[in-house]
Amino acid sequence: MSSTLWRRVFLALYLLVMSAASLFILGRTFAAGEMVQIDDQEAVMRRRTSSVLTRLTIDDPCWPAVEITGRELLFSLTQQMNAIPRVKGQFPGEAPGKLSGQMAFADGTQEDFSISTVLTIGQRVYYSPEAQTQLENIRQLLASHLYTLENLASFFYPSQLVTLSDGEASLALSSESMGLLRRAIEEGALVEDSQEVEQLVGGPPPRYTIQVRSSEGLDQLRLVVYANESIQVYDTYSSGQPFLFCFGGELVPLCQELLEAG
Image 1 (cartoon, one colour):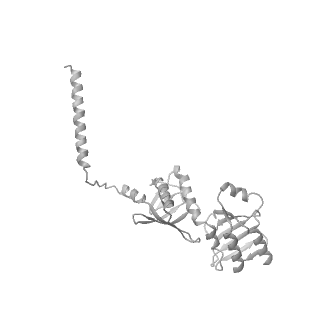
Image 2 (tube, rainbow, N blue to C red):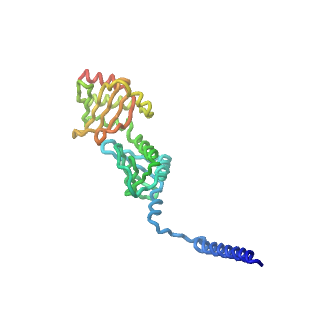
Image 3 (cartoon, helix red, strand yellow):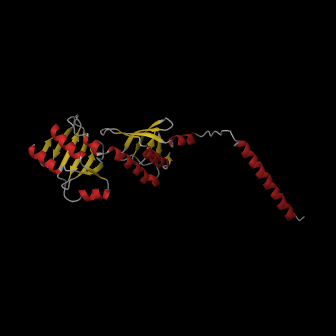
């Protein structure tokens, strides 16, 4: 045989022996019925974090706490959160509008969480520039369960301090007046389309402003009532006073009547 042919035969035999040895080692390592343990704390934490949510509670300094238990919604939230990578280095600071609370998982664990520009679960932070839209979608989804007309109406009870103003006259509402306002809010309708919100509030300045304070006098909410019966709700108890949501309701004639009677 020529030297070239010998080299080819030798190379073929070498590859055959190495392949057989590799298959033998893999077969022994992952033998049927044996469990392989991976001593990787990071992997364990990822598995735990990816557990399916069974309950999510949103806590807020002023608004009533909200508990979410719907399986389909929680499973969808789990999938969305698992798609956001964990970060160890620098990440954006918190922004106004942060929501926080507790998460309970199928494995029995519970963690505190918060979400704004980043998502935190326990001591872990999740963020990436590519996930900004996804983070905002999760925040908006949770906000839609907290900022409802039913929860807004709960602020208009005698224990609260509510002031109605048209820019010139101002009136502290009585318990009876707050009851009328509460019913008008409950009969309203949320405006969920952002473009529709801009169209509703564009143009003339608002007709009335309703300021809500706690019994201790701490600012909580401000409702801005426009002539077209659209009402914007703002958070006034935290920095930034962020816009919360917009709804439509018959508050203009009621506000006018209350000021005239006052």
